[in-house]
Figure 1 (tube, helix red, strand yellow):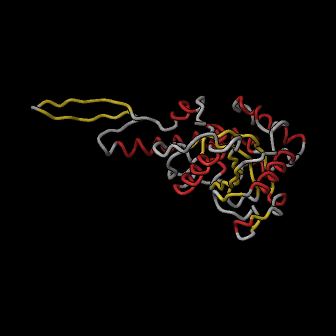
Figure 2 (tube, helix red, strand yellow):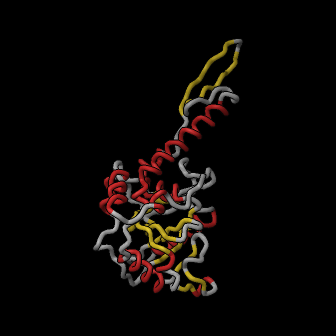
Figure 3 (cartoon, one colour):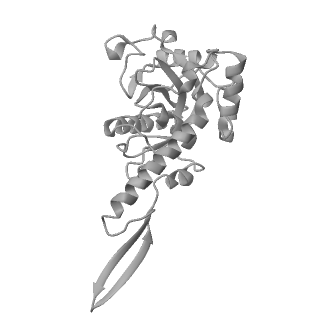
Length: 263
C-alpha cells in the first residue's frame, strides 16, 4: 500500500509528540546530522531546479536512506541531460524538490550528484517499475506545506503554481532560489525523519513479501531459491547440478555510496 504521509501527520506539536519522535529516530543513519544545516547555501548565480513527484513516501524514505533516486524513463533522460548541462557550467548544482502526490506538502530538497545509470536498477522501490537510478545528496528534510509555496508561479507551466506540477517539472532560477530560502527558513519541526522507524518496518515487510513471492515462483521454475540458482544438466546419462548466486540490485548502493560520481 502506498502512503502519502506517515503517522506523524496525526501527531500534535507538543512535548509528548517530540518524545515519540526521538524514540522513533533510533536507528537513523549517522548522516542525519548533515540535514537542515544553517550554513546551507541558498544563493547561486547558476543552478537548475526540478520538482520530483513520488507516488509513495516509502520511496522518499529509501531515497534518504540509500542516497539514490529513479524517475520514469523520460524523467531519467530529462534529469540526466540537465546534469550534463550543469556540468558544463561553473558551480551549477541541480536541486530536486521532493513532494508526494496528494500529500499537500513538500518533504525536502536533494542535490543530484551523478549521472543516471540506465543499465542498473534498484530492487527496493515500492512499485517494481522503476529502471535505472542516479545518486543524490539530501540537504533539507522537513515538511513544507503547499500554502507556503503557492505564490510561486511558473511561466513555463502555463503560469500555474509550483504546487501544481508534474514529475521533473523544471523551475526557473529566480523561483528555485526563493524555494531554497523557504525550505531552509521554514520553522516547522515535522519531517519524514519522525517516521523513520515506521518506514524501516514497512521496508522489511515489503522485502519479506517479495522474497516469499520469489520463492513461490522459483519452486515452479526448477528451484530458484533465496537468491541461489540451480541448473540441472543432462549429458551422457549423467545428471549434474550447477549452483550459483543471483545478484541483489540493492547491493549496488554500497558500491556507489562512497564514490565521487560528479564526472
